[in-house]
Image (cartoon, rainbow, N blue to C red; front, side, top):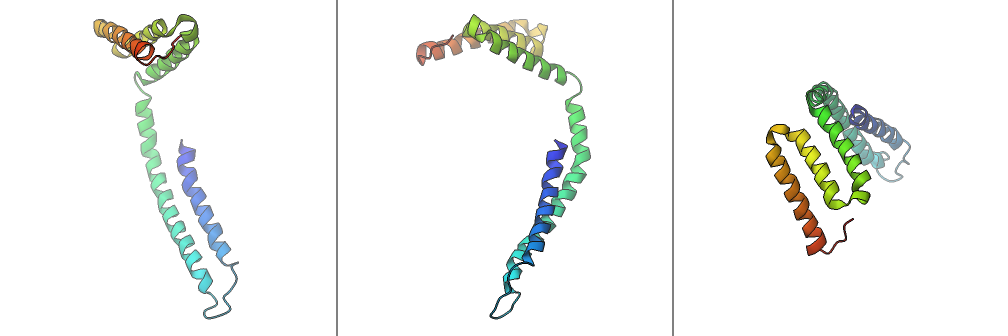
Amino acid sequence: MKIIKMGMPVFLVVLSIVFLLGTYNLPKAKLGNPDAPLYFPMGVSVLLLVFSVIYLFQELRRAHEDNEQIREMLSGRTPLLIGATIALGIGYALIFETVGFLFSTILFLGALLFIVNGRRKWITNIIVTITFSFVSWYAFSELLGVSLP
C-alpha cells in the first residue's frame, strides 16, 4: 500500500523532469522569438514538477498517520472477522453447487452472523438468517424465474 502511495508522486516527479529536459530538444522558431515554442511545454513541465513535489511531501507526512490507522484496524477482533469471512466465503462457494442455494445460504449467513453478533443475539441471528435466505430464494426462484441450484 505504501509503495503505491509513494510510487505515484515519485513517478510524476521523474516524468516532469524528463519532460522538462525534453523541452530543450524542441526545434527553435525561425520567425520571431526563437525560444517561443519552448515556453508552453516548459511551463507545463515546471507546474507538474512543483505539484508533484508538493504531493510527494504530503504523502511522506501522511505515511506515519496511515501506519497508525492500519495498526488500529488490525488490532482486536478485526483480523478474526476478516479471516472468518474469507473462510466462510470459500466454504460457501465449495458447498453451493452440491447442497443448493437455500441450505448453503442458511449455513453461511448463520455462521457469519454468529461470529459478528455473538451468541447473545442468537434469536436475532436465526430470524435474520432464515428470513433473508427464504426471501432471497423466493425472489430469485419464483418472482424472477432464475433457476437456483
